[in-house]
Length: 424
Image (tube, rainbow, N blue to C red; front, side, top):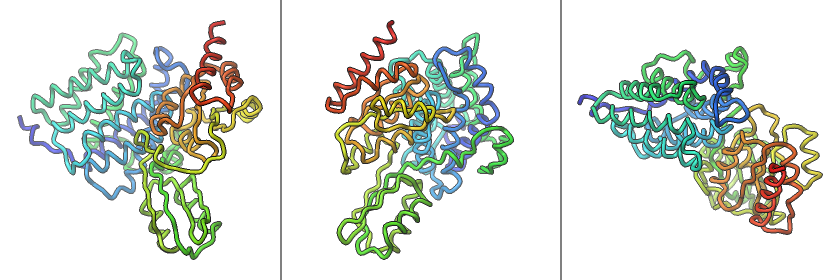
């Protein structure tokens, strides 16, 4: 029972996540190839989607000050939830979120506590696709979690727990491996290699040349900014344009408004402390509010003045298609030309603008369905989601939108328009 007294530190967890990322960097093309025989991923490249999601997850590790396993796992989870791309990326981000929930408040964790946290990860992954519990990635996750549970119960070391989980999953895989099964195999194999210090990626080396050689996007391009920071600066020493310029260097979604003798600031950042540290040099700082956008319904708490009650937000894969969608009645267009589609954060930022109090999120791709629903979990009742399957259905849905109707009424009409066209 020696493993019962073994502890996993923040440094161990950091190596595991880096190991998983390194393994995806080596295997993402194989996952994309397996996708062609898979049931649930109808478009896109799930291997590339998970790689970029994990890339967003590892970025916070390069500057992490908190070395507790609870603190590190939370930073990783928040970044992955906002940086998630595609259906596969969303599911992996939810596994990381569940792990963080199980490790929250812990400086170190025992093998038993880590095994229990893994169970949380599987539970959160299931919640991401509640209507598809037989999705191979979920089935594989549950089998692997059971293998890990039995190993923890037997008092094995954490490396042996991971080996047992991988073995249980491999034995349960379908004859023609599904890409969801492959993703879980790569994830746990990478965690094991990371724990043992056996991974090829130089620790936290995100130099662009390394990624250019592999033909992939560097994690530096996928930085997630999970913290929504708002505050007032009284009697500011700088002008609004100068403050805006300085904040653009350390965050995005920057709003700077003069309000009588004070300035209101709203910014999304990966380092709230850095924002406030700069702000104290501008004047007296007060009314500070920090929301973690990765948490469900967190953005529902942020109040702002909006121009219209309801707007339609949709994704366009080209400038020409964006113009057609706008002509048909869409008000907010998100760039979908990226091969992996927009991240959850890009959707949240667009719907968090001051254009409307509520939004209907419309996509023309099954590939983005879970991305849209993850954005809805963050934005709460301010949004609803409509999923079309192609450009033609998307334009029909846009034409069924009327700003004078409620969000609920429009959602029903738009779904009916999609279903009517699909049934022809």
